[in-house]
Amino acid sequence: MRDIVLKLGVVLAGLAALSGLLYLVLGVWNRLFGGWRSVFFCYAGNAAYLRRYAPPGTVAAFRWRPSPIGVLRQGDGLGLVLAAPMVEADFLDPANAAAFRRFQRRLGRIARVMGVRQIHMAGILPGVLCGQAEVPLQDSREVVVRCVLAAAEQLVDRCFGGVWPPVILLGGA
Image (cartoon, rainbow, N blue to C red; front, side):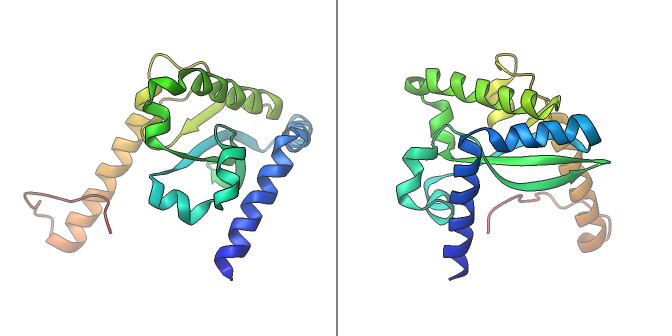
């Protein structure tokens, strides 16, 4: 039941965002009162995750269309979390080049309407878009590396008495 409610919430948020009215309201609020600093885009990554998050009938309708799924606190501001039912192969397939450019322009338009200057992306996208993005993408790869190293140092201190093991496996279940 909880899965169904979550999926229904994602679909409703996506439908509200398709009109653009949501971003306009957030943009007016931001220009009057501030608070919004960034837009962050994430995606399922692979088909198994995609099946868990997106009802089958919605994948085609929302593909390449970033839709709101949450809000994050980032320093002293807020970020709108967007997602689309996509996998990494979608971004890498040359047959999707035109759709990928439209997707980037949509993200840029959302950020402009909201009055935010920072666009962040998850997964492989910062590397894929490095130097060729159609939007003013914040290159967060260095920040991610620093965060992973800090987490590894905490893990080594807590679990290995400060002595680095030969290998630390990141990710996986």
